[in-house]
Length: 213
View 1 (cartoon, rainbow, N blue to C red):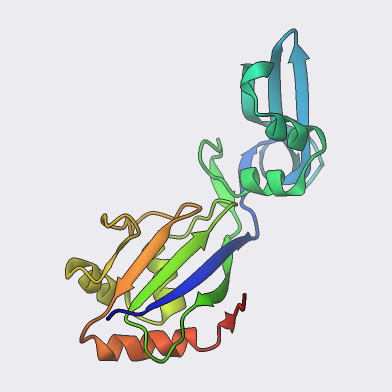
View 2 (cartoon, rainbow, N blue to C red):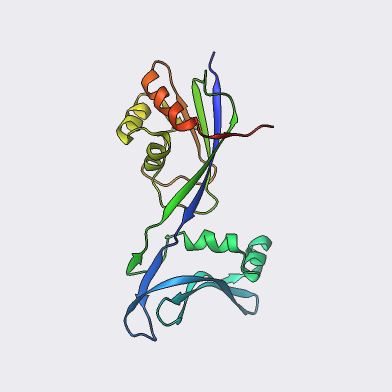
């Protein structure tokens, strides 16, 4: 009979990227940093929203579009409130999301801290490992790199494990190993005779704090 070991990994990105764009004041390309503040503009029933960045040399501002000319009724009330109060968590969701960020280049290497917890099962006799990923703030880290880094196995070993049906998504589908995980991603590792890999996984998991109900 299979026994499950269930874990929760919470991903926290550090060091947001600084887009390098033309600064109107300096007259040359400069890195810009998030100010932590949003700007809202109303035009009748339409709203525009931007995240304000500042030049790291002269403090000139650049507004990164969040949405434009959107009907107020189409904006979720919790999102609108977050923008109005400059919610720090909402700011993080945007500053770490490189999608659509119009920059000639990026400065700074984003790192990701992983907080791991065991919520069910023990290390001694598990056969199925289940990992739920919490990534409320977008991360720029491929899933195979994340798993290799945190489980102490090579990416090639993970590839082979997936190839033979031992590594898959929670819905039974193939994992997108070359893409960053999304919030709520469920990862399953099923081991039979892979005792060598299990020993490696246990070594990586042994320091995780157990959460007791």
